[in-house]
Length: 463
Image 1 (cartoon, one colour):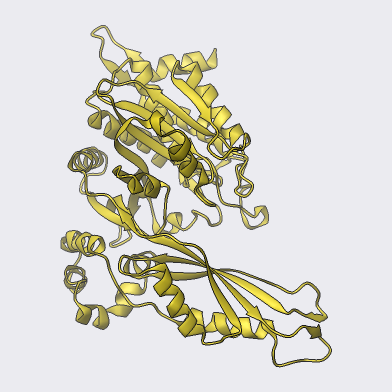
Image 2 (image 1 turned 30 degrees about the vertical axis):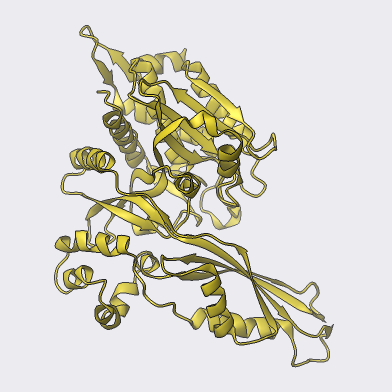
């Protein structure tokens, strides 16, 4: 009875037949659903995303929305969900997010990562930002349209895929084994862009629409040496060799090489900054400016990551007993390359920097930068909706430093974009894949409405 009452309260149809939403109640419903979604532990590895897909399927089925699970990885524990709200055009607008999350070490968090606890007007939990929160915005959009009885121009598809955080096998498998379920794709809306507050100037709100992304290149280093008893030190020690190699890599700086997307982005934001920042932002394509203002440009990690290929040390593995010198030590690097760089070129540069034949360098995953042309209808809808909710805010295209499953759609020629209307500070963005990931409740409530209004505008349906 409580659920039925909530549905009636969220969507009201007046005497004129006009559709009206009680957005406060819709926001509360989204909070409840996100708490339940976060509480399904889908840490990848191993994933086990099917229970999360079952949860979402039950919610959608109760609304009378067409929904089914797919098995893109030939693993019944790791299924995708696809829901459909039929339209008129024969095309499809795909709302896409992933159900798996990266690991969280409970002892490092101030709130349990899988309890969905609300504290200090924020909802804490692994996946609230990446990307279970986005999935709930997308689900609520379908639900509210269904309750209103509206017919969109295109089929609106909700796609929740597994394994995005590990190898992308969920999305890859969906397109390989079930390509026909998507029909003629008009556009894909996925993760990759969001609102930011104070990234360039205090209090300034910028909404980024991701149109391009870097290529992910994963590297494995293997240092070889002589094994032996630790009571007899030896020079050819694999641990020492690896330590020296990693020290050289950590001190190495890749060249600043902003892509044309990033050059255009900074030029578009230049008017919002004062001199000399405005001058620098208008001339990112100048090698002289890059050289003179290098420290200013790279002092913020988020901005630095847009301007160059990045190299992050993510793990060191070796040794099995304190009194034994191991014959081998491994390390892993996560590298994100900008247009103009290549996986093989990066490997050659790392080989030069390490300068030690006892260290093998292997590319374990290679990716290339990918992009879609700006879509004027999408940019218009985002500008109009966000300006109503955040007067004076800016909308700009973005090449993200992170990679997403949008790449699989772009590879087959579909246009894919990343957008989530959460407005986050730089510190809040750092909790993605970090400690105490959370979303502010007011931000979640506002995002439910903004996401719905953007999709409604794209699909020619009113509020």
